Image (cartoon, rainbow, N blue to C red; front, side, top):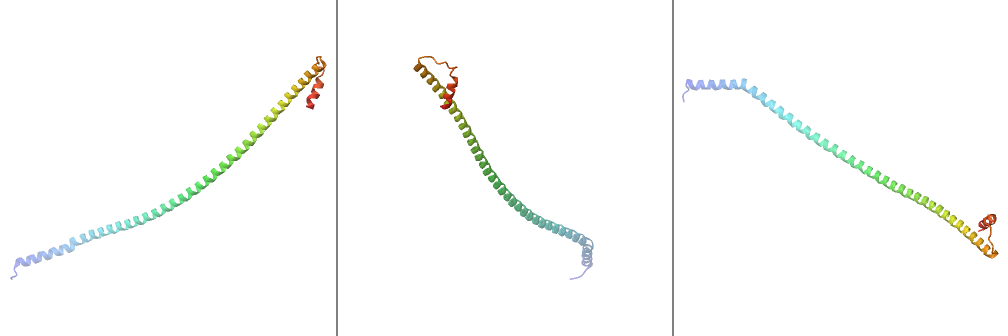
Length: 156
């Protein structure tokens, strides 16, 4: 194998290419790789932060749901108590209305009974006058004996 000028020129060109690559191209490539690594690392960190935020949000959402369930149970309990209270109030009001109607009915019955007694007294007095007329065979003057009839009514 002989070393000739072509081989030496090729070796020098290759060495110049390596030197050029190391001095010029390699730093640009390293900066691009480092920038890409930084971008990837930032993306991974952001993804991790997003994952943590998601977990935190899920936890807060579960707590909010639990609080809402507790509040709804409390509201339902209050509504049931209020419903029971309203039923009791309605029962009480109905009882009072029933007693009022009973009292009104009793008063009306007593008034009717008093009217009936008064009518009976009038009828008895009329019968007594008619009977006295028949016994005496003469007509009795109602005006003259009004006091007598009133006393008879009172006695009945």
